[in-house]
Image (cartoon, rainbow, N blue to C red; front, side, top):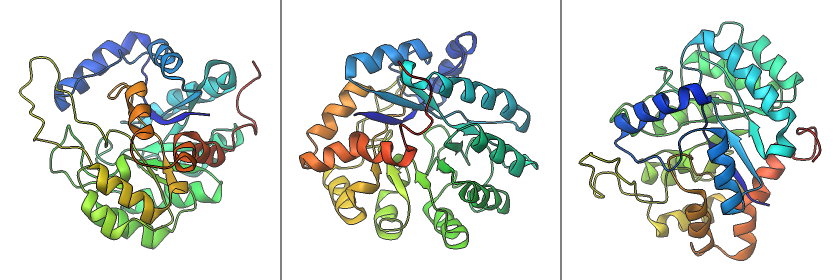
Length: 290
């Protein structure tokens, strides 16, 4: 089984505008148009069984509609191959109710994005949300490290992540982008080995520039393969999750990279899907039947 633990889609009436804005700010090529249909076509071509959608609540009032769609997506997840986390904003004062309701409806986790939500990961509001998610046996996945569209902003820096982990000690916590985009030396020194999962999204391949931009390969180099293998060895392959950040990376190309990375066959199967299936408890209340 192959599970892409880190993907994004947008409603069809918003996808073009949203993807265009993000591609411009990041100067990064989008491989898909951001719709669910395009992602499903990519999944069929690449042999992906499930893709996990990670919505981001950028304003407190958005969470109700985003979470309604997440619940609906999961109801048909076995048939469509699309699963979804919920969303929450640090300014949602009713965070306990939101998380309890999501858990009661079978949503396995929530996505937070300190950069887009303009709140440091070690802020007390995130601490409360992450602790409450643990109380409800929910996964929290966060953007980690710098963000390509907001250079130098440290809302999710390794030092802030480390502070939050020391205080909260979450049970099911996933750091995107191999623990911290463009902070991989710090991740290896300070995060690897802790009780967290790392996903591979937007970390292992060179960034393709968006048409008309002046991005060069030297600007944001990917995580070197040698460091990736060393991090996997130190952290444990059982705590690494395959993610692409689709539509910003190609699923088929990312799978080939994992297959050719130097991981052994057992490690590959764990990273590509086994770990995610276990973390998500697939088969236990996910969607309907085919």
